[in-house]
Image 1 (spheres, one colour):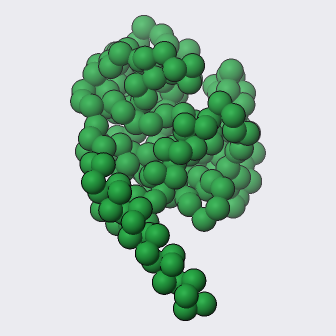
Image 2 (tube, rainbow, N blue to C red):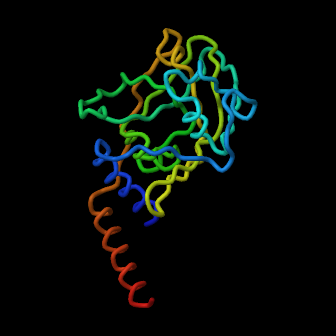
Image 3 (cartoon, rainbow, N blue to C red):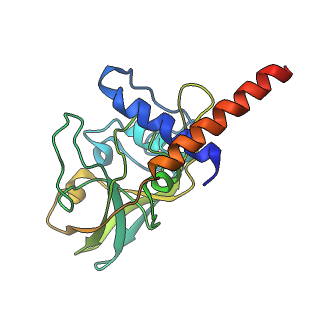
Length: 208
């Protein structure tokens, strides 16, 4: 796994640990979105109770398209094993509004490609679940936009992202089924990456 990815991942884990004490910031895309316009037609009603601009900002260039998917459509969702309060979340019972058609084999890839910036969301992508529509539902489709955090570390995004209204996400026309627990990097890899980065930084300082 590239060192840059590991450093981004573990920087994120440190921020997650400090989340209750941190100030939540919102990523601003290069192109400013307008609520409810054709660039991303997510209205206040669709986003409620979430701020609609926050949802729009999560898409690359604040761009999404409304599509009605038929019954039987399957998506995937990634979620943590604990609530922000620290209470455990059993696998397979977590409903949510951000979905994807992409699948990942480990938490790092899910966090990076879905741009799960820990200063915005405490989602550590521990579990993957299948999300199945039992009736036609309107989704808002786009690409997960990059989410920068303090310093040079960035969650690049790039996965296909879908958003659905709260009425649909928590209604009777959708089911959530536990699929798998995602792998995480081994401790030896973590320590090796940190040591390698420390050596690289030391060499750079000597040469500067």
